[in-house]
Length: 224
Image (cartoon, rainbow, N blue to C red):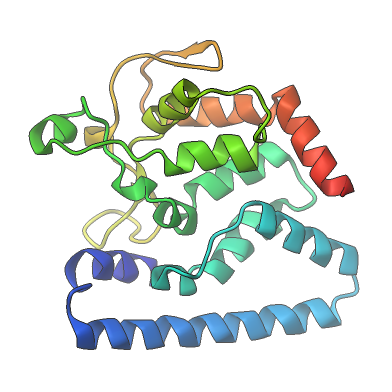
């Protein structure tokens, strides 16, 4: 379903009939998923785990204001949040950043490195949404000591993190596109990340997960 929705965004968004049918389809999926989520929480014999799941889903929020997210929001919680509620924050952070719901919601699937082969050919630009949210909301916090240069650096590091389309292996899953990845070394929070393709993003997220500002931000939020 994810791959079909991604293709819809690109190919059919100007077709009114297709758009109506698509919106109805994802709304039906969303309502069914929310009903199942509510019923499971009400019947759970581990209510604290349910509350933690809801907390983390809110922390790493995706919005259904975009119709494409209707069909992905529940899957996002089920696949990226629930498996890590009693595990490591770093693992949850990586799962969240790689999930199609987050990549589509914050437009990283369309982010193109300006100096990448595709960027040079199409004159397309960088999208900073995911980089900014990861720093401001998901890890360090708004007072975590990062700068606009760090936002741009993380956005460049994460270029290429995208969603597999129907022609790709495992449609609908995470897919790294090297042709849109910004080449060269990047400096994030004083640390230099050498050119490494996908590995740059993984290393940067693991460093953010272990940062003292992240621990403070998340701990205060949990306490509140």
